[in-house]
Length: 205
Image 1 (tube, rainbow, N blue to C red):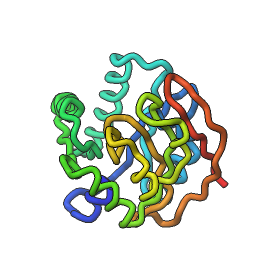
Image 2 (cartoon, one colour; image 1 turned 90 degrees about the vertical axis):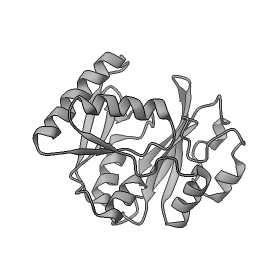
Image 3 (cartoon, rainbow, N blue to C red; image 1 turned 135 degrees about the vertical axis):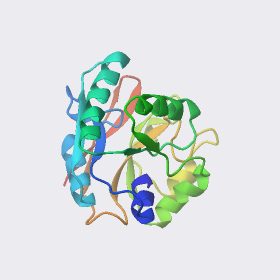
């Protein structure tokens, strides 16, 4: 949705998407999404992707060095801004601002302080389709993993869980949307618990 807002505003040229991939598992960090699904996603969106490969486990100092080297490279190519989908966590925003200021890159937060209940339903209404791929069992029952991110899912959320999962209660894989060239066909796989989180694996169909 953050990408969509930037595209619609037309004030920035999006040159590349960026995410971290845990090298040992070849999966998107935290989400646990297979690398081939990430490739299909960015291809449908029409961009290239910078896969920032991090070790497992990844100490914060190592993460910061890897990210600094990656962004220094992009700064040298002419990149001036970095867009984030953060919603309301002030400490996360402050961290990003401080680190990017050291590189003279300006952070952009297109969704900042929006009502997350309204935003979640706006995304669904606009045609974004997603599957819940990871849940924090301290916040949600494991059965929420593998569900569609839809009105039914939102209605079933406990009142203490943010509708956009901003506190890390859950993570999703978006497989279709208004800025996708075509939907990504996925198949549900096994459910596993790892590092204190419950994952619903997905594969390409």
